[in-house]
Length: 628
Image (tube, rainbow, N blue to C red):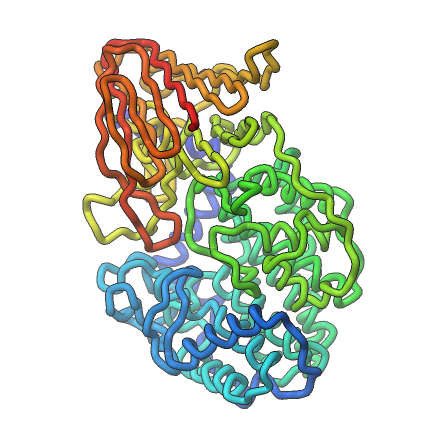
């Protein structure tokens, strides 16, 4: 790319990001390099030592299955193992080594410098999220639940011992675990949730209030950076200020904490209203095009609304609640009603903030159920293990009506199409980028049948991949069920987390009811090289026809279909699987079946079969999917 084209690309992308955001980020990075930023964050140790939690509550009654699961998981933790990204059990130590990356066995090399001097992409330690995960304190909540159901003091003693070890090894603003304000907010969510579980939220220890107070100072002093990201960093960090600040204003153990807490709660409320109004579309779509990031948003709203009610604070605005309910509906439309799973849409960083349940990470029902109870005073599912968060929020014993989820064919203005068949359903991603896109997934099509994800998305694997052949793979066009022209990306990468030439649609239709045929949808876009792609989907009961019409100055085009694992056989223009078959027209297309990757959980990848339809000069490809 020529220098002039690069300049115009940066200018165009900067305008889309917002000039104020770009200017602030520029100033922020300059303040890091010059050392100015460090002046706002003094390094100091924690003043208060001692137990964070003590006994003094009524032992709850849980179903035996829930109780046994909690105790089994807690025994693993006591033995020095932690669960990373709600999936991987790794040796971490007791207390854990707070600077260990258990995926490669290496430690972050600098644990005593100010966080402003440290990099998030250290070549020795690898993915910094692997360092941060133990310090998110999911284990605090798990051990609190174990103590609550068993009264075994070993769980409480472990919590207190490990938290004191953490404060010894992680002085304020020192080391990698202070580098991210969102990580500090998640710690606030979890230590307060543990206090609620242990019924000590109304009479906290001085150690707990000091811990939260210092975390809020770290978050508050850098809140503008979080806001400028226009993503869940802003929502979670301002929620941390509101929740922690409001709680301190009620229960701080010093007048300084109570006054400061009140001021931070006001600041948090103001910015939370701002973020929800700006980042959530009218249809409930979120600024980050991702189902797991959308869950992070809803989990954040769950904690926020719960503590607002618990502390008897005034309600948020009507628009806040309208947007929250729309966000709940969006995720309920995205999940598979049989499995509770959802398309692996967009970035997937393994976050699971609402962790008081034993459902799989890929099951979105706990979040949707809890959010629906808090914001709609109704359930969307019948009784199940996804109800456990309601128990720990003391919401379980109230009778709620069950509305149920009705999946329907619908075009969501935020960039999604849902099409519902008899026993199957599909989701298509179309380009509607008010905020920065992360994946080259324009016109990606996800297909589900009887709870099984037949055509699937890629996930993320890691934001700092240490395997060269995987670098850039999971966010690339070839990792999605769409068309690629000449093997180039739909939108070129400017940096690790930023793409240029954001695609705009030429046309996006509505779902049409066709007499005697079924449902039809069609849309079209043009990429930055001038290549055009029109995708039309026709659904008749459970037979799907995808028509791709291509034009432009390209030499080769591929249509990619990422398949559910299984045994497949290709016979000329047809591929057979145990679930059904796929027919490709015209016959001149070349079909190849190779191995690709998917990552349903962060830092977990597995091979899947990928069908590639190569068509070169052919301008119309029809894919017909039949279930048996």
